[in-house]
Length: 269
Ligand code: HEM
Image (cartoon, protein in one colour):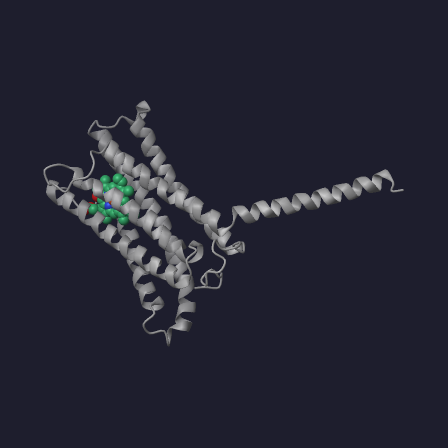
């Protein structure tokens, strides 16, 4: 007959191994490629939706006329779509999208090209708006942060296009390996500087609206809450970037969404 203490010990060992297995399962689900992708899309869509709400609900919507100030509104919307939604998706496309290497590569290139169109458009909007109303250029902290961000983006785009292009691969293999740390550094730098530029831009616009009497932030107005939410959602992008970089570098990403897709290997570059 088995004595009671031995039986208790065996039971607790099997319980703890069951608990361990359950924890492992939960971790593998939470950190699986599909779940990471869904979390990522929610995090990058939130600032775009909130910016859209601000622009259409409070700033007067979009227009390209020089008679009113709505031309400016293209600037925040285009910049948030470009730097958060499009470049964010381009950055994770190789690691999280389920379509296979060559399709992911095409998506990566298309998203980057679209982002360039939005960035140029957003910049032209604010420069023309300043010219229309006779405002000075590049005097603010935000505009300086914006210029740093644009410089980082141009550097990253030019280096990457030169090194990772597919037309002449012969001498590039070693160069690609050497360039990868710089590529990652510039990418992370770009996320930080874009978040700082967006945050300073939102606060600056809010201050202009306070000065003109359109916004009374201290009275707990809905627009004030919306601005706080928008800024918080942009900060969340930064926190999530750190989380996703940590997860992708430490955890073997679990089964791909489409297991037979040829491009779903962690070894792809
Ligand atoms: C990464 C994204 C962004 C970049 C790279 C960027 C870049 C710039 C640049 C270079 C200027 C200077 C234009 C000039 O002086 O003629 C500017 C102006 C401005 N931006 Fe942005 N911007 C970004 C996002 C935003 C956002 C989200 C807002 C939110 C409303 C915003 C608000 C403003 C305002 C109010 C101005 C005019 C005043 C000033 O020159 O500082 N920006 N932006």
